[in-house]
Length: 401
Image (cartoon, rainbow, N blue to C red; front, side, top):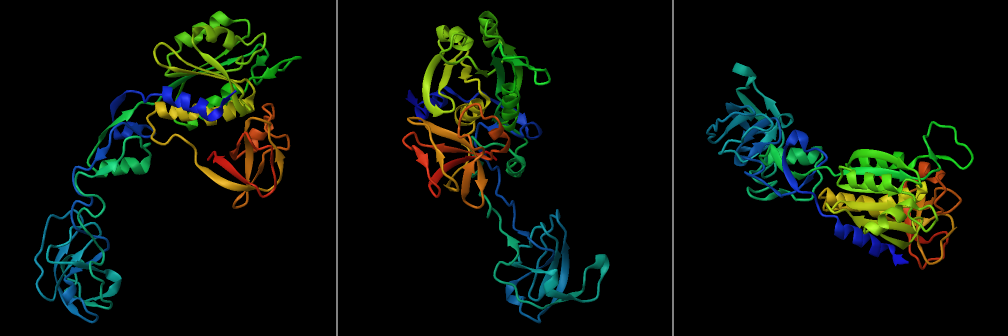
């Protein structure tokens, strides 16, 4: 057996980010930056007001001071009115502060005199003295011109796209979304809506993987099912898939009908016993065009665990992501459970309270316990040297949300 960490490292080393392309902001959501975004100008672009109120000179802004309102500065105005001693300018949020002003007094900290044209009062009286620099957003205080606003490897969500727009860009250099083909193998598989005969089971792995791929931001390009007596068809599907990666489930062990291993091992896919439960029998290789081939076990819990631990990080690396691992945290076991001897355990678990964790089912981490997937919130990662988790033991948890 090989350590599961070595297997994961091998997969990650073979997963190279896809070539970059330029897309508009509207098309970039969910993609990953291929180049840093450098601000074209300072953010903010100019000193501006953080409040609706009055721009004044702080030396004139004592409690009870009465100031003459000599100008009105709405947002978007290019005016820069002069302010002398004892004078103020009405100003709106986001408007450029006059050069002569160094603070903004909010409306609620003033009493206004009679309104003139446009509702601008003739004078204001201050009820509270402003602190130095109060309510003025300074030019470049968020980012200086030429600073990196977003780093390569960043996934682009709504906030990141807004930052790119603020930095002065409507086209970004990104990695395209990886296209993935899924192939389920096994003569026992039938459609989920079918009625199973003796020895048959509903096929669920492709359903699991399709949803997991979508959640990870991948593009599912094809889903196929292959019987154990169809090696030629399996080879043709793997070769013909117009995909950046191929995921196969089932047929990766040492059984007499393990069609995936029988078909792909002679084609350069390496099959190993990985020191993990579930998921011991696995294969990995690369097509001639560089597309990774992931051969997973057939049991659904093993597919779910191996996707999270091995496949998802490698696919995120293809997508160009800088951070490819789920969030991890340490929690305390609220109940005891057994661990497999000599293998790391990947156990579907529920998060119990603020810092507790418990198995999702009473059956442990066996690969056939599909019901545990429906209630699992995380995966506990228990080292191979651990024979038993006792109540109160610290456990490393990979959070799935």
